Image (cartoon, rainbow, N blue to C red; front, side, top):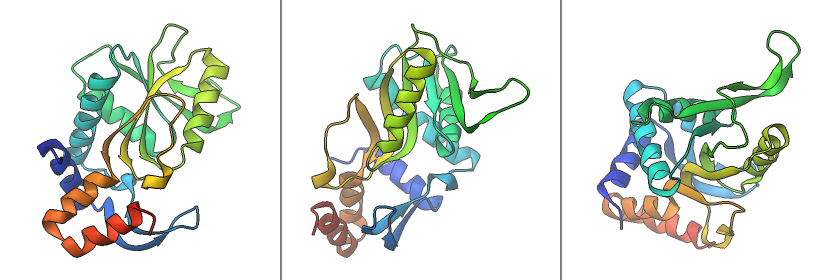
Length: 201
């Protein structure tokens, strides 16, 4: 069932030009009838909506979170929006550079860095294969000797055949089925195209 919060989130994505429909060839080579660019979430209103939506997911599923980690690049703005939206003033964020600096403070991580007692939630734009998220989890453990508690994404865009288990809890603000449900009320032809894609047709 599409809740009012999910409906509002989808409308924000459409309004900001994040969610687009057409024919898009993904990195995997799959041709998708929709495309998501969370980099377009750049206005103050959209960032507030984004941050609030993630806070709802994190407070519901990841109690006791102390740190928000945002992978480069889109995850960094999401992590910033999350910590600014949270009522918990002790929530901290950090991110990593793609390349280590050789001057200044050096190092690859930036922000309020975790320790072995931290509870970290990774925030990111979409879930497709999860490969880069696994790499980030391994890097965080290698540097800080602490495991990431869970992952929260804006959109889980996986099709039915791709819904394999992830090594740690993964939650999304919305998923592809939610987008289909929204389109049933707004564009039935498009909803059928999206449903065929979700089912692997």
